[in-house]
Image 1 (tube, rainbow, N blue to C red):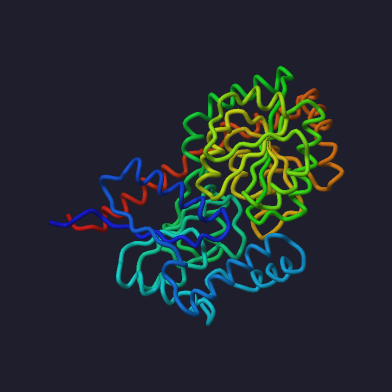
Image 2: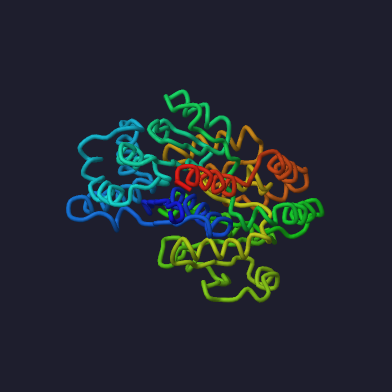
Length: 399
């Protein structure tokens, strides 16, 4: 008697965006379909040894350094621009050794969220490529996957223009954290009430994992400006990172550690105005974000995966410059076209942010940004993708 259908899932654990999307799918697969399928979850570092492992570590280092901008960032960007999405040259073959061995031993459909993995294994097993990002730069538009998941029709068109088969592409809606999807309407209505009644507002402030100086300086300056204007700033900081150290130089900053309970958020933020939320890893960051999201009236962040909040949940975004990497500029353009985002282009704007926010509240602009980002796009992408994957697996598994 045949067992459950099996799905391989391979992480790269490089950056936050690609792993974040896999986290969301696994959450929905386990919660909604856990009794119907079996998951084999692994990552490229666990699968690789020797030269392959060394190369993956170099890739991770270059990604981290490249995401900080500067000369290494420009060099890394040049390398990425020179690579086609379906490239499978000598370096990719070295990186692929352990991964190919794994799928040969486990020849099941395989879900990935990083385009570099698709050409490595698409000749061995069916590859399901999760492209959760709104932006689709050329480097991400792979053509060898048997299934491609994209949030919007624009993404579907981009993949087709590069040669992906039309029937392989599924438009899913935005990939928003499932916990936030459930409460989206309630949180939006409470947020609109606070904005329209000129209440004290609270912003969530986020850096990318690389914490580039150009971003962290603006985050700290904006937090100070919000505090001076009587508003609240909740700053998410990696333990031991640049942002935590920069906030440590300020006085009157409250701290929330991963295991601390949020007993009275309002009294904490009213007393200190700036709350540093500390996390050690992606899981802790996610849990803390979900706990505090209900208090946010806007957020400050690079234009990466969190831009889904502005486009789908009605939470206005203020975009940190410089916009780094191939995804960020395209995401920013989308947000601007949707009229849900504004720029924090330089340190002067960050230092004046509290006053500017007050002007936007008084003029109704902040409320309009929130309205532009709510109810126009589907936000249950994770659930839709999980359902489609299970249907595919069960269709391929003999009864």
